[in-house]
Figure 1 (spheres, rainbow, N blue to C red):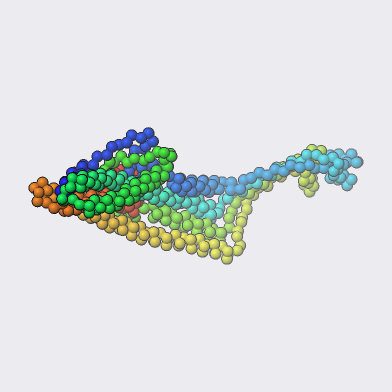
Figure 2 (cartoon, rainbow, N blue to C red):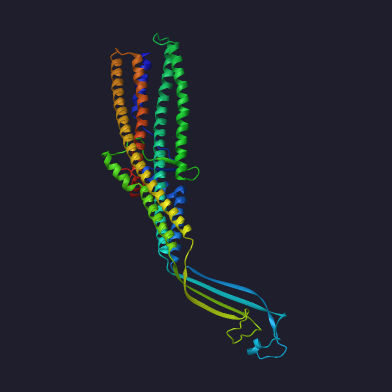
Length: 467
């Protein structure tokens, strides 16, 4: 049994010097946290979908601006046939209107064309046009901040997936090394049983075989988790089929991060979280729409013009202001106009509706402010917890290494206990896995704090996400 313990101890020494071979694959993409988040922000259709709303708002703003000039300006044409004229008395063409025998001749159809142009230019709208323009301009800001909100979500999700893959890779390597230890222990026990060593019996073999089955279960679990993590990151980055993302980091290590006082992060959250800027822009837009609704109390002054031209061959213009031919006409009308909505009850209801929408956004802003402060403080305290957990795991790992060294020395002096050495090896392996998980949780906690304060995407875009 002493030989088995020594073999386990030797295998542990190999385990502590983890070395990974980089497999050269044709369809791999090596990336770090910085490049992964940047790629996700550039290619994410989620961001693109929200950005389309921003582009739509920008187009709506341009249309509102264009409405200041020639609000209505359109041309209408009509094309048909018109009757010719029957002039049995050969009346001169300029005096046809005086001859009662002149008639429309529907047996002589002629082509008929009509063109009408209408124009309306507002002069005084009491804030209707300017209010719509302001609302549309603030609408762009609302959608722009919505893009930032989605970018924060995508960046946090990508960072979480990246560290999940790093954790899966670390556990995979650890599992492989543990498998070597179990296999060597099994072979050593079998050798000792064949040699008839009194310190080994069948119970030792059964115990190792049970451990081997548990290890096999763990191998499948770790491998499937690793494949899932890799596939999730591949999908998030929208890599081509068959392209495998490979983290540049070989070892999972904690992010270099110095924790500042809580007030610092609360202030950052109020400054950088896009939800608050979005609420401010929405509030400004709703305020402008209140002005638009209120403008209906007052008369709108405008300039209007209308031009009409129609022509049919075989017909003649009559020089008389009281006689007109609808198939042959020219007309231009222009002047000032006033338009007043007289249903003031409807106008008042419209103003109340606009104010209710404005109040709704104000309440949403206050709720968002409190939620953002809560999320920032929660992320701050979760990071402190993760930091303490990581420190505890690292200290426990150091203690386990000291324990293992003591057991190895005792065995070298032939005063040690085999069971204690096995326990020391097992504890060290478990603590290595726990330390990997603590590092991953700490790194994700850092990303969540940066998300809660609204600076995560700014750091990613500036290239300072990871020092």
